[in-house]
Length: 103
Image (tube, rainbow, N blue to C red; front, side):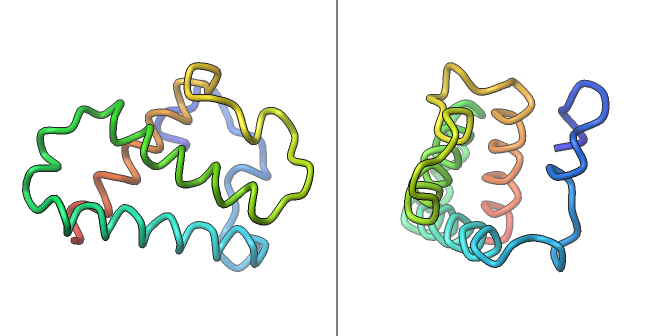
């Protein structure tokens, strides 16, 4: 997030793992698993995906997790891709690529 965020992110957006709520850790683990499984199924063909496609995949997986854990999420939590800030889109692509390298 810090890599792409213009200026300084809100303190709640950058926290140590131990300070992250349990539901967010579970959500992050689930998104990691979805990206890992997708990369394994696709093999080396994920290299043909654009950064936008990778970021969209992470955003969509995260969106599903928010709906699972938050009954009435704030609109910004469930915003469609076009409404997301560039920093969030780029961070999602970074996440995908990091998991992809591990898979």
